[in-house]
Image (cartoon, chains in turn purple, red):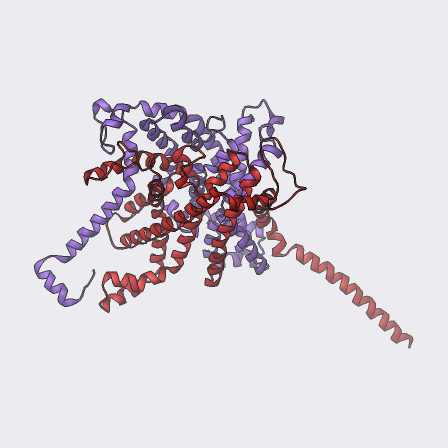
Length: 310
Length: 321
């Protein structure tokens, strides 16, 4: 398909099939970067199956031989991280649903309904700044708010005794709410981009028919949003599952019963294992498992979420 | 006379009742207007977000003006001064971390963008299994920093890490990437480039795919080489993608805390990799110097606003907001 200048192409074509070499070169570069991106993950994966002895005595990226093979690291890692996995799930699912919903209605109110354009724009800018600010700028007030003012450990005490209302769940509740608050801006932005690309005709027609703003949202916008809800949900779930800073500062220690999986994983190396890299690698994979599954199934949606957040 | 008076009174009555009708009508129309009807839609999320973000920033600024520290005391809001900021600019740790923050921001952002652009051009060519390859290139972005930090800790292991094994093949090393203060910052930057270049690639790919094909063809017909076509025709049109990617990467580098914390397993990271973001979290949550860390956080916030404000202005001028 590429056509270099005629004379040169002809003279080279007489000696060598030029295009093939270019293609080989291209494939080589593609494969090189393939190896570059996969090697830390691959190395970690094979190391997780090695006995402690094999970890230090074998080449890191080569799978273990029969004598150096063990599944023990996986079972230990799974036991160690299982409570954290449950905690992360209890936190991520509700906060993702809430932030997707709030982001969607905010984007609807700011794009598909016309009112004061200038005011809408100012509100949009305030949302956008909310996406970019470093969370460090709100960490001290956040922990002061949840721990000293709300008194997070006693938060669900009035409901005490019920199975899902212990101090552990209060901490998780605080992290969940925090995630919702700071995820709204990015969800709003993702939906806004999508709503602006929707054609006006349907909505205009519904307005002429006298449909109210609420019924336009429920009957037209929400059903049309399905693909975008998928994108935002996948993107946001991955972000919240992977998040660490709020868990660290609001839950505190990796040994707390409320510790999320990223927090437990960060303590895995330091308290249990020292330099047991097999265990660390197995732990890393167990902690990443839900996001890896989602990524393998929905890589396209994830990429779309990433690409449209600017 | 009487008749005319009568007319005047009557006309006055009509006009006054018209005004009150009009006002009532306007109020009713206002309550049915799109502004009021759409209010619950945007105002609820907006106020939740606003309290968290702007309320948080305001409160943080207020705390930074007190002397709040320790576990038990409450901040004393009666005695506000700029002591913490004065202390911060004289603190050698702040000077070192600011320098490291800038090195991280500039080196990480530049290389990640160049690599991302290169990969985007690579995948924009017609190659086989393109989507599968893109999925692998982007995979690190789907992983938590806590997870990737574990991988890289093993990659950089001095005895049997893959990096030293590969360098050993060409007769170099082994290097103590994590333990050597001259190397550790570069090791961290390299790992972060690994994680983020797939992201930069996706942004550039979106930009490339929005360009019309005929420009490429036209340059081709004029006899420009592939390299020249990209350099002269295609890359200049990726300005908006470049700005977006640069802003996201710069802001990330500014607040990168999780990767560093997880790699070293503690608040106190090696001094060579200590950045403002790690200093802030350490001062607050390890040392309970709340007011001081709030002041450092304000410095971080100002730095990020210095990046965001021109960006939003640029986007607004481009008409892409």
